[in-house]
Length: 165
Image 1 (cartoon, rainbow, N blue to C red):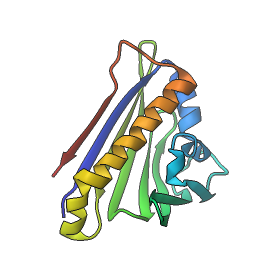
Image 2: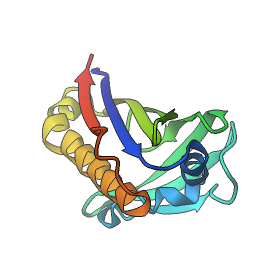
Image 3: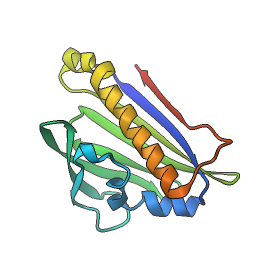
């Protein structure tokens, strides 16, 4: 089974604390998720992030298919990073690290997601045409939404890359 990795970097002209205040509130995930995903938090969004926190969602990754997604926040370093792991959901593995790093004039938000697809070879065949395409759309939406909320930093390019191992 292949392991895939998505890496995203986005610069925003806000302080590290402002970035943390937004990202550490699970309820804000709905704000940066495209409407067509049918994203709805069922529980766990009533407190800022803490290690051991369980968050339950409903999401429709494809038209006509809705699934439950349960994540655990496994690590938190206030203001700097947190890690969420899918306990139940559409992926065979989903390990998502979120970093916030100060730079001159703002922050770099970096996401590193290691993931595996279900269904063995069949799942791998869907990666380039369905899964990778959808993840690109989700992160593009997120980039545009965060830019509309907080502004842009023209001198620092945003990045989105995929690897497989």
